[in-house]
Length: 462
Ligand code: PMP
Image (cartoon, rainbow, N blue to C red; front, side, top):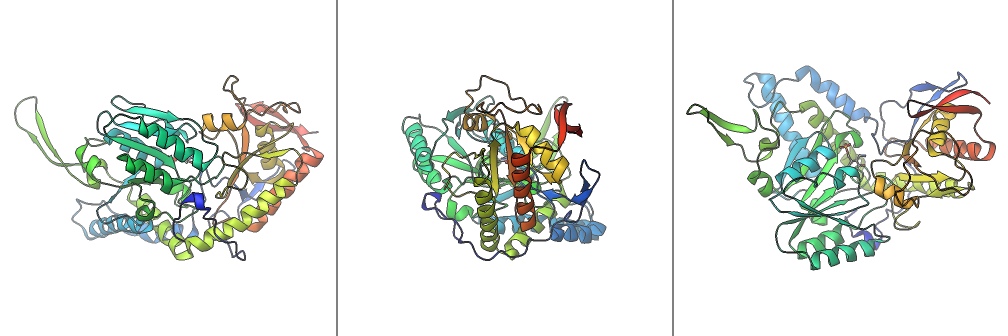
């Protein structure tokens, strides 16, 4: 698949469902309130995806050879250094980075975007839609930057027009657009290539938050034209604590190191009393002070290899079939409203949030877990402005996350349920989820629930 503009609806054509990629935890059984045990249905991939079996195998094979990187003289240090640096090249290939771009290993998307925020030239205007995940929304609220929050668009065209309008009247100077590839709330794809085209015409650079996009679609920096990409290993089937900021080197090389310390410094001299002169590295090392997360970076690269080998198009096509079943199944359940910014038919990845008339979402999620062994998520998903606006909340009422009282019919919900899946999800999990939703909505829960420590927990048979 080539990364075409989203306005042209780049939905992969559904084909026959192939087998899921093997992931850890597929045989883990969890207890229900009844005492019975069932295989866990992990449908919270958007928060954290299970590790690919292949990633685990690679990590297990490497760990006996693990040793310090970069400055170790021993054989295994050299081997580890080679694997660490090769992991950078693997990620660069996975993201189809131009030759002169670099890969900095971080702790995850939040860390990557904060690193970029710390490296922006003074006075940079940062354009960001108010609908973004907090990791994309908040890092720019720091001294020296000028964040501009764009209003929630209701279509990709509106998003492009809103950016065009904001940039047309913006003063000269360095600028950055931060945009998400796929929403962690609705799963909807954003018109990244179009927005990048507009931004670049106005001399504004672009960072893509690919936390939710990269696990589901091929991301080509070359084709999208973005200047940086941020992603997290734990959403990419490699939950070993590493993430990536990949892209242009110039602003990063000109900035103070994100962390000051060993690894980032080339030479340090104590010349006169009270002064220490430091020469910092350029390139990725400048922002990777301290001992790096070699295992995490290696695991992330292993996931990139596994996804590339499986074929992003085949994975996306399989996911599209599961998504079709999920949407069709939910559409048949009375009172279920799926949240959407760009409209029902807009392409999305395997992430979907919904509310159920008469149900508190925390109650619904708790019942899915306790009575059916299904793990989803409820709340505002670290995207409070977006979810509140989709729920029709003007922001006046606090979210009652965890309160089990059902919302009276007709009253707007204060939080939502999110179901998300990916390459390791068997069809059976989607079917089990739909049948659980039908049963909860049709027959009600079989258990009572109460709030404890902000969570909704089972409280005896009804
Ligand atoms: N951006 C998006 C779109 C996300 O979904 C998330 C995680 N929910 C993040 C950023 C932050 O990722 P992390 O927690 O791995 O830093």
